[in-house]
Structure formats: structure tokens, C-alpha cells
Image (cartoon, rainbow, N blue to C red; front, side, top):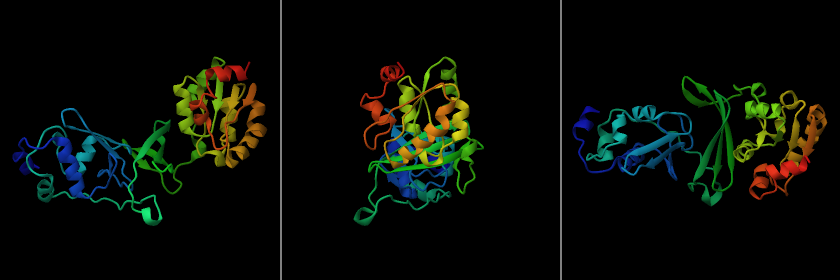
Length: 286
């Protein structure tokens, strides 16, 4: 690094230089996301953006901080903020640290198998050290993976090391607070729907694992004596789940109502088209 730093003169802004360096090092880019060199990244999770001054703004969706990212490349953090004269390729050749990147697993098939897609990552926190990573591709495909916090770093929970039955309901603490003051609690099937409903001022929750892994005991415990609006997805899995909810959870609530959207709609879809809102909920509960 001392050699690189000594040859450092104004020429190329930090963002262009850093992205060139990642490219030379072998990181795959999809949209504005790159493979992160600081963890085993099978699909790009390092978002890079350029500030007005040309410096690098970065965010690793797996939890790596910017120091970990640059150190894994054998670079100094200051290279994210100041211009350069030494080409990224030459700097990479001089650097003794050569990161290794995992082969990318593309999500397409057939003739489009290697087509790169843009995607969006959202993290849903069930506790301080457990979160669900949801990746949505531009094709509409979704991937959900659980992560746990280990030594200030988020890592994927593989091989059944995470017991979902021990997790609280999503947004559980806020839902309990709402129940204390008599608010209606909306229960639906996805974390993204809960986030959208919460942003609209509605108390909402779901459970870890989706419709096929209904957490009856936890739901009964939290929703006991509460006013509940159940909003299942309008699909086969949602209808099966709804039958169990009505039989096993509804009896412990103070008041139970349900509503459902059109075919294949979930609670978020209903919210977006105006069929599920605070005013609608108030009408349902009279």
C-alpha cells in the first residue's frame, strides 16, 4: 500500500477508480451491486454509489462495513474518498492481496442463462441478531435467506442452524404495544406486507417461515384477547393457512375478522390499491 499511496496523484475520481479495481479483481457487477470481497458472496450484495464529490458510498447487505471491504482488497479506506493517478489495473498488479470471488449463480435458464439482472435486497429484522434477507429480481423471482449476527458481522444461517420456532413474531414488540391500547392487529403472510402496513400507521405482524410453517403457539400467545384482522394471500397456500388460523388462533382473540384480495394478491397489494387502509379497517370493525 505504501507504493500505491506514494504514486497517488489527481487524475481519476475515487468512485471510477474503485469500481475499476473491483472489475480487475474479478468481482461481478449486476446493476449498481458488486460482489463483496469481504465475505463469500454468491450473488452481488455490495451496493456502490457515487457522491457529488466523486467519492465512494458503499453498503454491504450482508453486514460488512467499509473498513472490512477495503481491507479485504488490501487497500486503504482513504482510497474511497480521494482521486487517483495510478490506474486500477496497475495498482491491482502491485498489490500482494488478491481476493477470490465465488462463481455467480445466475437465476435464468435456457438461452438467457447468463443474463445479468438487477435486483433489490431488503432485510427484515426479527431480533437484534436474526434477520431475513429478501432478494427480489427484476424478473419477479424472489429468494429469502436467514442471517445471524456473529461478532459484528452478518452471516448466512445454513444447514438448519437457526431454529425458526424460537423467533418472536415479526414486529412483535410494536404489536404488543398496539394491543395494549386496543388497536386492531393485522396479521398477514409476508414481512414486506408488514413493513408496508406499518409505514401506513397500521399495527401488523407475521411469523417466520411463511404459510407452510404456521407458528400457532406464538400467534396464540401474542394475539390472545386482541382485536385481529387476518389477511391471507389469495392463493392455495394462503387458503390452507387460513383454515388453520380460523380453527386454532381465532378462538383466543377478543375479536376476529378477515379479508382477502383478488387472486394472487397479498396484503401489500391490497394496501397499494386502497382496499386495505386504516379507514377500511375501522369500517370492518364497526
